[in-house]
Image (cartoon, rainbow, N blue to C red):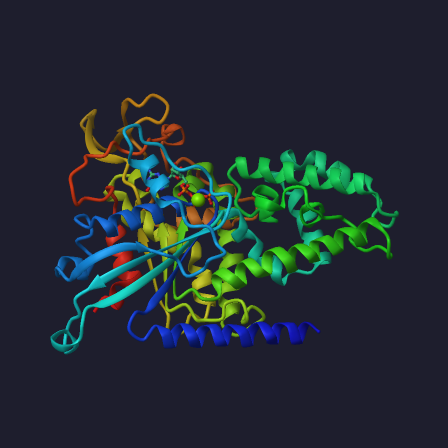
Length: 477
Ligand SMILES: Nc1nc2c(ncn2[C@@H]2O[C@H](COP(=O)(O)OP(=O)(O)OP(=O)(O)O)[C@@H](O)[C@H]2O)c(=O)[nH]1
Ligand SMILES: [Mg+2]
């Protein structure tokens, strides 16, 4: 039965794909996957990228732009009628208005199409008409990404692993109430909906507290960001230390709901939105994890490696039908690089690469180009040198979030050897040297910059144009 259903899915996708490619002879479309855990910077990235493609003076390292070949860029109706449109105008207005603020956390999926008309190069340029490239970009709550590994995790394994994780030193503080419930309930007893609801609520509370403490490896994602699923049985379950039980038992109910969650929530999301991705950018907020300490770095590494392993398996393995197409280019980007001085960017990039290195090496991204970069989608600071006791400190200056006043912060200094951070996070107790970033770093919350309003200029950024060139510059020829 499963086989037939999967086969039908595949057949459908093949038809869709063929249609897309045939229809795309003159106007190819490229689907850009913007992936990242929650708060990694996806919504800001998408908004700023689109704004900077509409007003391109800051995109000098996009070759088609510096070559003067981009004729026009415009927003167009998106291909999927059943997905809400990305609220580009609202996000941009919030980020670049007179009193700029960051967008709030994304609660649902949305999509946008930007079309670029460009003059062709080479042989085609003399007799072919202008080229058109459609970029399709999807935004979604980062929490949902954490569900990807669940697709390959059976209820019994997930249940045991989750209980074990909750007992770890960095989590147990947050998980006490849930663990007390888990130890109290008898999974073999007959179903009691009130008990199931209580367990799900306590488990969700624990996940939220763990996230607040800076931990990343947290699932199921819909427990943190339920979207339309709030209150449904699909999100009313919790892991049990003894996950087996007879028919009609609590354990059986929990298992069925977990399975339903995987089947009706997780699988369709990845199938519909990841299967057609051509190019992928993975945004990583490494600086926040470094600031939160070695355990948070370890947790980020774990979460990213579980997710990236799924991408790898996607090529041929059990996720084949979900990652139908092979991603041709993969960019790992350390976001919010404007929090540190540019003299630190090489280190930040090296740390980000080191965080995902094992996954990249294990992965068979054969034929795919993989690169890493430190970027700021919306640059909220400028740099400033401050002399202190004969020493020059490389600082950044921006508007403080709470006060709106300008503040100068010394963010600290990242180690030249990324191993100093990444290896420390690998030790079993994940202790190690903290304090790479300054005391001030944790308190530093910059507001978006006040727009200078020069016509033709999109929001200020760092290396967004390099990311654009890598992701789709080769299609603008
Ligand atoms: N200084 C600076 N801060 C940034 C930048 N990008 C994102 N941020 C900060 O990071 C926060 C999260 O960014 P979002 O783009 O909303 O993150 P997201 O990945 O969409 O998060 P979810 O919607 O929760 O999945 C923002 O509210 C900003 O505080 C940047 O380029 N520079
Ligand atoms: Mg978002």
